[in-house]
Image 1 (spheres, rainbow, N blue to C red):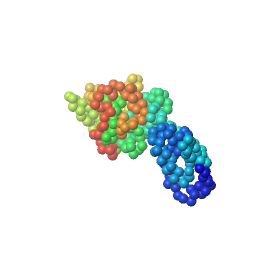
Image 2 (cartoon, one colour):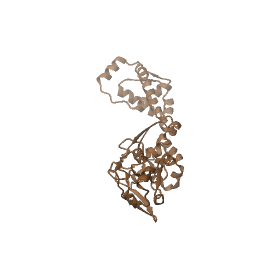
Image 3 (cartoon, rainbow, N blue to C red):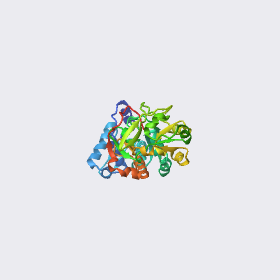
Image 4 (cartoon, rainbow, N blue to C red):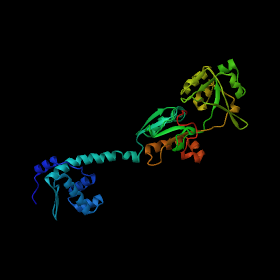
Length: 342
């Protein structure tokens, strides 16, 4: 069979618009020449030999050039086929490398995890353990956005979020990762020396109390318990802070006023005596907890699964205490999505 005139074939391609060859046609063409056999190519591709022949013929028709010489005894590339194969091989190799490059995301924890985290969760949950996590998983990069706003993690391109259960986004898979939160009233010895020690929650109405306001405008309520009934005291004071627990702690230490907060914020200060607790017998039982939440169980990334397992391990008691609170779709029951909070 005479070999085609490559120059005339190329001129013909230049004159006529081409519909793009399919990847299956390219794969069939390269496999046939790589194995010098339609039958061997068919076996490699998991297709029938007639189907492979059809794919190669379709490619030749699209390009208007004969690419493969076929005889009953052999298969070989034409000059045009050799040139096309030489140009395609590095392209397909790069294509395969690109696909293989993401295999790490399927098989081992790697890549960037973007998290949106409430300020209390950042300080109480992540800060104590983030160093250990990154040491254990050096191929993971954490990008943590700390905000009280109720962020849409899908629209914001976040992998997950961490908030208290009452402020989770709707229809999320939620995994409990902390103990229930406690709140105690603390003050400095110097403050009590000047203003006295409150004996009941109602006495707080006569004291200067440091309050916390969420970006939504809502104040963090001061809650207490008596006779198994929880109630709120509407305290007042000369200092209101937003998203700065450390500022509130510093103010309490300096004697500005009293503060109701999670004792983990002031572990060192309580141990040193810089702050002391009052009204302990009125402290409400622990309530709420921090949850890591994400949109779907479908193809959870190994990096996210590693973080979930790591936090569960660190807070094993919390995440197993209530089996109904683990890995479940959880509908927000707190403030509406436009509000803000921990």
